[in-house]
Amino acid sequence: MNNQAKATDTVQPGMGTRVVWEGEQVEHPYNATQTPIIASAAYGYQDIDAWYDIALGKQPGFIYSRMSNPTVAVLEDKLCALEHAESAVAFSTGMAAISGVLHTFLCQGKRVVSTRDSYGGTNKIFEEFLPRQGVEVTLCDTLDTEEIEREIARGCDVVYLETPSNPTLKILDIRRLVDAAKRVGALVIADNTFATPLNQNPLLLGVDVVVHSATKFLSGHGDALGGVACGAETLMAQVRHYREINGASLDPFSAYLIIRGVKTLALRLRQQQASAQALAEYLCSEPLVESVNYPGLPQHPGHAIARAQMRGFGAIVSFVLVGGMDTVVKLLPKLRYAHRAGNLGAVETIYGPARTTSHVENTLEERQALGISEGLVRVSVGIEDTADLLADLRQAFAAVHAQRLQGQGSDTCGRHAEVST
Image 1 (tube, rainbow, N blue to C red):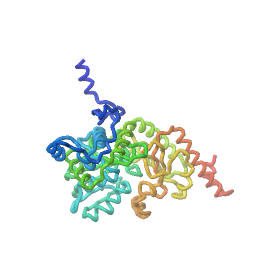
Image 2 (cartoon, helix red, strand yellow):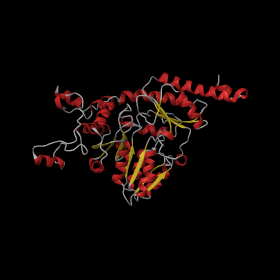
Image 3 (cartoon, one colour):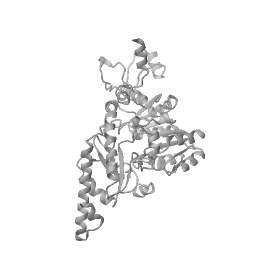
Image 4 (cartoon, rainbow, N blue to C red):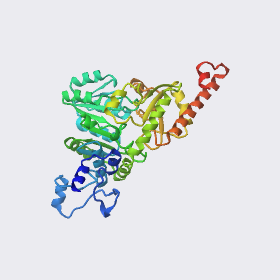
């Protein structure tokens, strides 16, 4: 019996089991089966010496929730396990995690190399905030791996990767860029929000720090804000210190909601990815679509790399519409099973153009410089039935086609006559 138990203990459980149990096999007050919300700002001690040891980190415990909180600690332990990290630090938002990590390791005189195809908020840190602090920032063409390697080889302190990228779904070769970074002693940070720990574990590919917007797929229900950074304890101790002093700590209520959301991540993502693949394939056949971005498509430029470093292709699809924003404003209101909102990763499907979602912080000129078309629409695919999402998209396009034909009157011919059948 003991031998059987030992053999069983060596078997790694599946991700569907791990998202439920990791970080939560601890004893809760009153023998609660669910992680409680500990909404206390401070924690009191009769023994002053013990209090001091806890404050110095010599003993486990909590003294003030800006520094650590029991509910938040469970979330950190869960994500730490899912990302194969030694330690994790939770933040109040995804951008707090990203900016906190970047500001921990970058200061005046240091250099960071990244790509142009990063989330708009991240891009603002690179273009606006870091340069004014004396940090040299170099942003490369995301698809030009050799250019990225050349810039890394010139010497840098940090390499920042986002793959798949938001909202263009470009794929970076993590192993190759990690190798380039290690040759010059640079720290590698990767945003794993789109992939989630189920599809990709950058730390296992050599990355030093992984960041997530926990608001998105980890939470999964669009009702909580949060972020998390994962990595070696030596690095996370520095990140934790920055967060404690700058104050962007995660509150226990949001931590509880994110913990609850993570437990269903495997179930949600399974359905979302199946629908994303189906929607991407349909969009490739739609005459009003110029291009489709989804790494699960064989023709996607990063498909082979994605297959090599990911276990699934994710639940985000983006596409560029013929006619740009004029077509966007006609199509999106006709969708029945969709929020038109600036979020992603929720159980409901969400559509939105880049100018009001991923790159709302950027001007038109900045988006154009980044290669973000005004006709680009990002779809965060929800858990609805695939057939219903496909039917909804088809009817919306059919309505736009009919509207275009009416506008052209009796002169309609050729391609438009064909799509009306």
